[in-house]
Image (cartoon, rainbow, N blue to C red; front, top):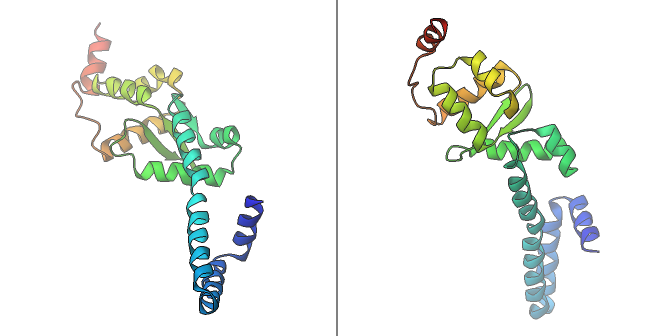
Amino acid sequence: MFDKFILILKSIGRKWFLLLILLIVIIFLFNPEIAIWMIIITLVIYLVSFIPNLFFSNKFNRYIKKFHSLEDKALAKKFNKPLKLIQEKLFDLFQNQEKKNWVIIYLNKQYIFYNRESVEKFMELYNSGFGEKEILENLQEYGIKTRAEVKAISDILIKFNKLKDREVSVKTYRNEQRFK
């Protein structure tokens, strides 16, 4: 019943709030006590409508941290939610990833999530002097499939100052490998 009420209110659109205020004002003129109770009930219903989103957000965040790499389409399928909703959630996380230990990239019109372990391994290889090709070869088991992903991850890490200067340059590393 509560879901049907919410659906009816959503179908009316944003005008339901204006209609409700008008109704409360009219009722207030005749019986102020009932109008006050209507305001309290309306506020409680409005606050309760945020609870499902909080549960989804917590479940979503816990789930994505379990895997090395996840794409938005896989998440939409897992949670049985529209792709647009999942992309909006990932966009919010993408905007607020500066102090997080994971990375979300946007590549080819899709979001890809990499957990802490993948990012740490990437940073370790990057600082060791590995180039994009070598990083890609070593991170295949972490779900990184293309050089474009490697480049996007390094760009995001540089953008948020998470990636330090290389301890060994790529040229030095390749020369060491060549002369071994």
